[in-house]
Length: 335
Length: 195
Image (cartoon, rainbow over all chains, first blue to last red):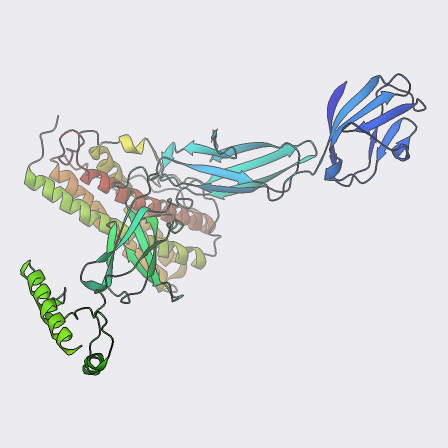
């Protein structure tokens, strides 16, 4: 018959060949490969100080007939260490979820059991399909001062362990980060960036449970962040950006009254508006150009009247174009 | 069925709710500070569990989202009236225990008591706005509890302040619910209707 046998890493394992006598002639195989007789004590297989690589199928055959007498699947592993448990409400006031994991793998199957007690009341934590190591609870009461006690027990064939978390309703409230963060330059404003975002979609009722926000930004070339806390609204204009520098911007959220700040949102990058580069024309350059023997095209220089920031209206374009023509003509005269 | 709100009533309600939210927010911040000072001064363990004490209104509520506006106001008013009496009692006990020895804690208690009284009055204003009779206070309230030991007094004080801090958060939420437009009409809900 075939079964599974669990053993701890480092253990000495003795396998009997089913009901065969100790002095029977047998052959043992591991995953189909014959095992050397040096590992046998009579018909018993002795594995000393087993390690993970020795997991596998072990079979015992009667010496002459090669009848299969015994088969077992050896799983080498460890008993579970204390699990890591976390509980959080990212959808307040609907409920909260708890998730867990083992700090180190056991290499054998584990079973997790979670219990939630609120005062004297047992609550059911419904397991999520995905991810598997998570369950959620709906709040039956709000504004309770009675703490919740969550105990997670992990069991496998080699042992068990557990951990307990105790917390109150407000302490675990932590929204997801804001979504759809967008940062844009503001036309004609070299020191401004307009940032907007949305409430996390997991937050069920931002009208009744409004969020406040924390915005941080810095130019890529510096390490120091600037911070702004915003008690309402989902947009903000940065007015002290360094001209022409690319910025990195993030936003975090928190319930207005309770709990802790979310993680930072995905970072967005933006560079404030800059004027189009002007062709620098000084008296010296004009003089050099006129004495040059080769004729190279010189783009018409922009002038004050073509400054985008200075003029508005459709007439401005005509003025700029005309000015460009005049200067080009002037330049040609001196080549 | 209550009559639909007049624009001026809706505006007044909105104004009262906004101010109430600010009052409750400030009250909560002060109660939290007071709790820290109280725990330290009374030599208590901040994480100590305190069993529900008779006479202390519990903020915990089931089906909070299904409450009508009137229910919210009435429950809040009953709670803050009870806290007014409890805090006055704590203040008296504090003075008996320490005399003038810890004026800081006494002053902080008195300041919170004042805010609780002001908030209770604010709630009465909101109820009057809805032409609801403001429930009368029952004489001097419930009969005084049996004399507690000093330690029991301290624990009860801890329970009172913790529950008050919780109520302050709940009150902010309750008042915000009152300002929400009714899903059917798009106007602020009449308090008799389910929000």
